[in-house]
Length: 174
Image (tube, rainbow, N blue to C red; front, side, top):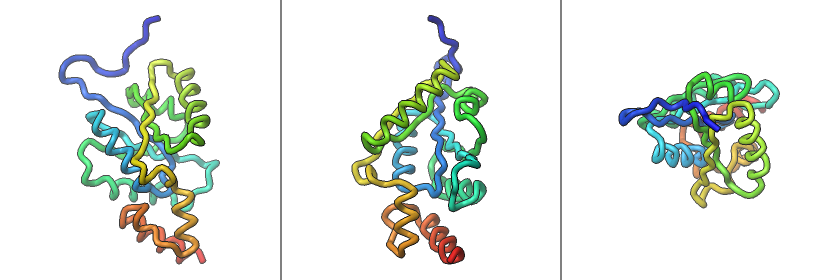
């Protein structure tokens, strides 16, 4: 079976991956996965999902801004957004690898289903699973928002810009 390569070939070809998510908000766990991906790829596109079915605390523009601020010192990162299927976005960008973070066994079934669906839609795209540092295996945006809503300190879980935006957003929503 012959598969068409999406990557440009040759010694100067750049290796690019897409790391997608809602990032509502971006956490230090997300940043850990981005750093790990940058160790493997020349460039990582962080694709912020504009999913109308998912209730987010932050608007798409707010999430894009927080991701840009949190990654501004990372060389090789581009922040973008997309609507619709990730497989179509990746194909449109000419990227052949989707990076996904796996925190625990509980993520595995959902992530495998998504990887197989993406592969069935765009067979030349591969999904690469990366595990975060042990410090972040329990961390997700939902937990961070809940801790912040209940008045807890989230500074160890999110970059300072996100902590500030969380406090401001939650203060204004009460």
